[in-house]
Length: 99
Image (tube, rainbow, N blue to C red; front, side, top):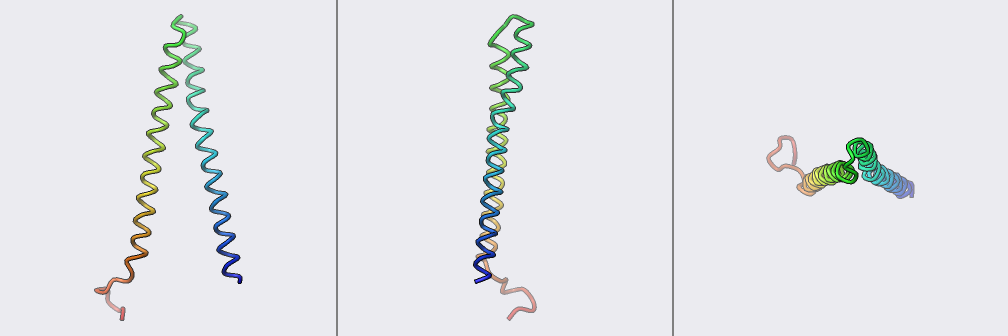
């Protein structure tokens, strides 16, 4: 019974951690382009080119964010796949000391 409770607690902690990570990434995905967009708005006010620099900075930063998150997600999925494959492979028959 204790083993099941421990697994349940560990699973709940992992879900909470994942939810926190997702919230942080969502905030970063919105806040960073907004900050750069605001900076672009200030530059546009000085230059008189209203939407140009604002949109350019916001879109470039948003594109970088998407690329960065996709690369990180792909790497973590590859790592998870390799760890699962290693778990399914079983013991190495050529390894010394195993019967």
